[in-house]
Image (cartoon, rainbow, N blue to C red; front, top):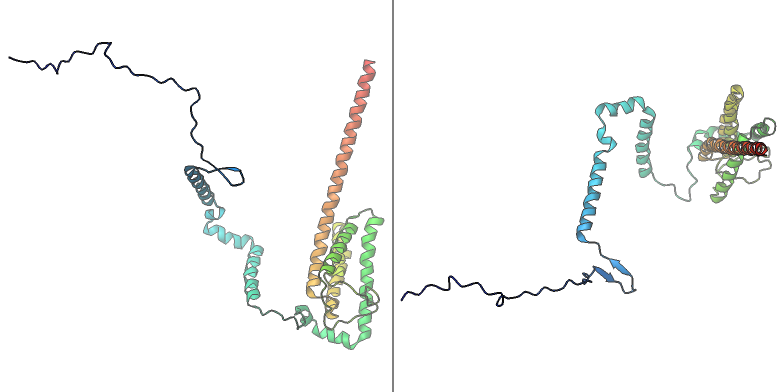
Length: 312
């Protein structure tokens, strides 16, 4: 008897016998995933940045750095540009060469020990003049008196520009300069140079104490000379410049100042003259703004009054 493979053709299950699948109802409040936070012992919550975010930030930073390096100005230089710097800008090139030279001098120079007087090249250059003035005190007194007269000329001119001409820039510059000189001179009190040749006719008169750093004689002369040049008083300014050079030579010869005091005095005169000019310009701008605001306000008030009269 042939039996059919009934297991190949099993009848479909009836609806009553079908397995039913249960669907879970959707939860209204799903449980949140635990956040990657850690609590420090003091209760402050700190977030740990994901490693991938850190990686992306590092990559972007490196990319920005490389793009900035690729746009660097020196990468665009050519051989002609480098030669052009030497041809068209020789002064900065000389300064660059002097920088390398003085770096070599500074790092190989033997320091002056504290028991030895300071080394001053200006004293070496004026050594013969120092001996001459030391052997002739009368000549030293005459030169000191002439130098005091020159200081009086500087002071008179600086005050004249303010009191008589109404131009306070030179006076403001001198006030700035002497204030800064007093501060620096007190902060660092240098020893009196060895071999100093004082005189009762020198300024300050009477061999009183004075600050060495920096030279007020030289700085005030520079301030007066710059003002003369602004006013195109060329002959007077050149006269002051020549007298200032003679003053520098005398101060070195009498050991009244170190060379650095005189050099910084020249720079101080130029610097404080520039600062006084900026101060003067700022005050002029403030005055113009106040004037314009006052004019505008008075015009507005007058217009308002006119409109009120018309309405009335």
